[in-house]
Length: 386
Image (cartoon, rainbow, N blue to C red; front, side, top):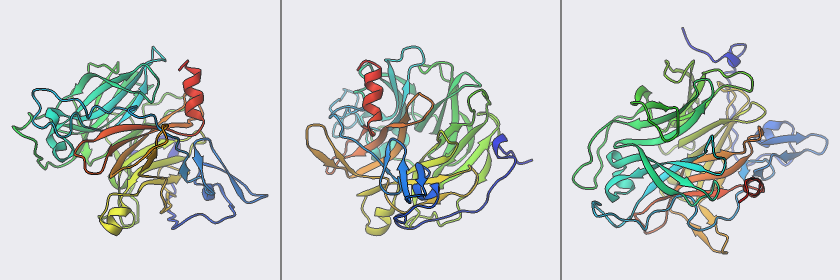
């Protein structure tokens, strides 16, 4: 029997809306505000939630970044490295506030062993934990390896029902090669669990074929269910009654998701907002499809009132590859992918930081960037005493 999450059992919408271009000047529904705000119908304008901006609330309100925050160890090399050109390269991660020390933040990061970079991500990718005592933006410093080669696409969430951290990855256990090079293996999504972020982590349990996993627990306040949603590449959505149970496909997007199509995406980040609406932030590869380049339009945003239907993909950028810094400078990145958000812990789920894997032009190195969003990031840091 097909598994359907409890909050979907009464109805499952199967239609979809794909909107091309910007929203109309006058909004009529909250969908015209990208479900990131509400439509003030009497004036036909959107009131955006904190962290979002533009006429249709479809853009992240990104703020200047302090240099060398996030996790940037591209100036680190070790004697056992096969390559020193890229230093210590990483590729995205997610921020986790320590459950016992509110001033301690963890960053779970994909990091490449032996000094190898992105071209050798398979099989040199490992999963490491870094720490920051200066706030969620970092800078973060290496703390420990959580999973060895080959593990990639790490995404960690806390399951209230299981009282465990759940780490979703792709990969298989294998030894590193004798030099930086890449192998091609079939992608598969696995999950590991641990009572503490430092571990010990269980052996990875294979769940399904796919890549770029993005889990989101389905519990609500007062209802600590073990149900979980899982987005994967092409914005397909699965659900299961528990993290180690059978995952059932709930939604396959009806538009063309093949390579070089207008809707070509990867790296989905799935979440549910405080109103119960669903969102996906993804690496939207339209710039490759149109011009064969990895810049500048990279951030796509999808939204829906329900998990299984009515998804809208506005073909417009939620963010681009240009990042401004607090010293007045800016960087136009060659690659900016693997989006993740860190939210406020006040129940309003305000996005506070955008985390990406980034690579600069004419560089083989990559690192993990954390960029503050709106006023909320500063207010959050001030409340923690930073």
